[in-house]
Length: 253
Image (cartoon, rainbow, N blue to C red; front, side):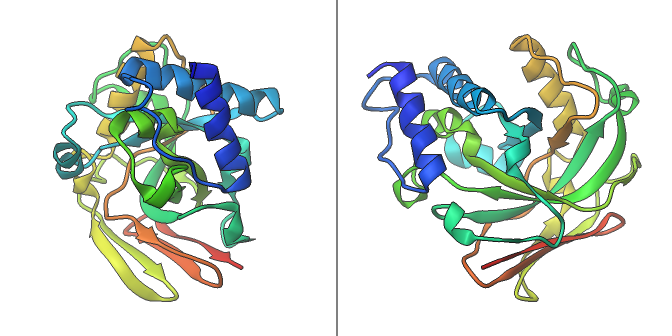
């Protein structure tokens, strides 16, 4: 099975919410090949008229990185079809086994064409917002290898943005809560995101530069999860709250 055929399987699994078996091991897919398949999957979305709205990062939590036995972050692509409006009600049947994660979203204020260090990264960001990312693996039982996950666009499925506020630099020790039906199911602090959420944009600039990808003005960056992900289903309300940044939520039917 070639890369195009694998991308077609993953694309169909996502479009119809029907899981597939793991693919990487059986087809000897390494990490470089996994990113090639991811690009093919994203290309199918663009061919259908979607456009790139930003990027997400994975393994920004060091403990999770060690758990998976990896030594670098991974990244995926966000498109306009993934955006859910704040407080919107959506059909849970659009996903397979969805999970919610609390994240900080950053808005890019000028194109990032090369790797940028932490002391300069704020020149490229103008706004931040509380966000929820919905991750949904296209593999059966939410089980996958690193290569499977990358090929599957790092489980990117949807995101919800709260209100944008001006960027502040002191955001590395903020309290976070994730609630389902008003019950807190996950909590933590923003320092779980690479010790400083802004470091996520630094790392993305490095990864994107290596891949010859420009992070464009107006695009968003989801900095990575600060807490464990929480499974949700139909007829539930999901709300994230981040100290200083405020709340963001959505409902399912």
